[in-house]
Length: 262
Image (cartoon, rainbow, N blue to C red):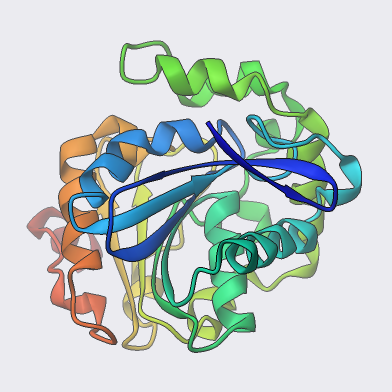
């Protein structure tokens, strides 16, 4: 277990591998731990970091820090404290929002962003995500299997206020505009069977400007990285291995996706 002290509070993180830095940011359900298979895949060629945001996992529980803006500040302070320069960001749900906001605030510091289960608007988030206890959310979105057991157990560590207050602070954001404002190549991944977040319609995704691309995962829910880890990690490595500045549209859409949007 690795940790640093920020604002006199503990911030937990883990790191694997060597190479260009890639930061993994978890979502509203769970902690850094469900990123382990993806971190292991990335660590072959990259230095993979994952941290617990305020109120999640083994990072301090302080309600003063639970807004989106404070979680964004945590990422900024973490990178400064560790002396990490230009990065790739991989975010899920809450983490995807933070990744895109960071890129917009720090143009030139983010080489690329993989945004998983990104809410396209505040109303696309199902009310149950706002109201249920962390353990209930884990049971709803993760289920019980050997692949999800560690993530399920970690989810119970979350302060329910960290989920609720971050969701409230989303109301002030134009979520649909975030991928464009990020000013970095952005690949959006979502499970078509996600019960928590309704994805942006395919037609709208395909009309986004060139740096933005989307690839759906059929028969996947809120956690594509756990539902289909082999496919997700292949896509992750293909995306991270693109030349700097290259459009993610080089990563082809699957034939079944093309049929859906005709």
